[in-house]
Image 1 (cartoon, rainbow, N blue to C red):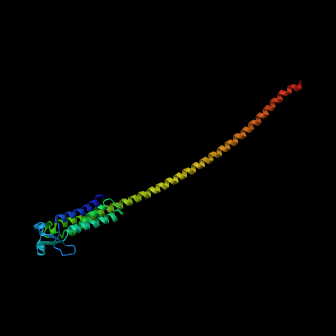
Image 2 (image 1 turned 120 degrees about the horizontal axis):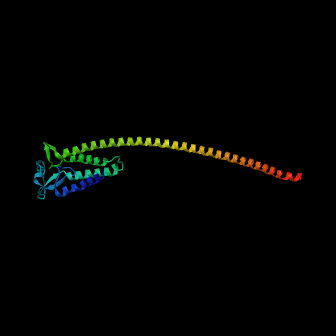
Image 3 (image 1 turned 90 degrees about the horizontal axis):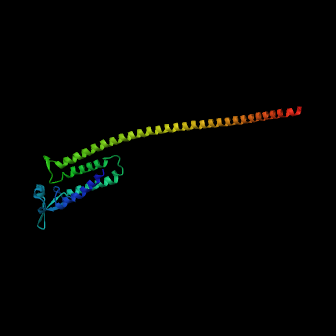
Length: 231
């Protein structure tokens, strides 16, 4: 995902090397973006019969008029880069999403643009190697996106279940903690009541003991004074 924007940007720039080298151009075109190349500046084995039929003479120089496929691919990749940076990166959901988006975008553009090229490698008949590679890239990108998206959804559902279970455990622990606090509060209250009762009992006992002690002291004094009276 990190390398994908750099790769597609590198392709945007790299295709301009084809322009300066006057290579990797397309077949004949008379469209708005058609490009003229001097016959002397290109390899003759890349000039098709159709291009020879539509040569243009300007000031004694023979030109071929072609599709600027380098420009098509450069602009295509530039649009893909903008889509990746502006839209996909901001809403990325899973790893690999950006890479497979790049792979599919590049493959789709290549599968079409390569049909315009005049120097492509053919496999069987009119079937071009680069077109097959582009189609394979698109299929691989679709499969990769589907597989990774399903895995992302499964992981998201699992995380949701874990979160629900965690919340349930958290609530249960919170309730248990509240119950323990209530029991401790009741025990503390009961202990304080017992302390008050014991304090009152001790106070009552002390008062009774003092009263008995006073009575004993009085009896002793009476016993000491009785012999003197008899004498």
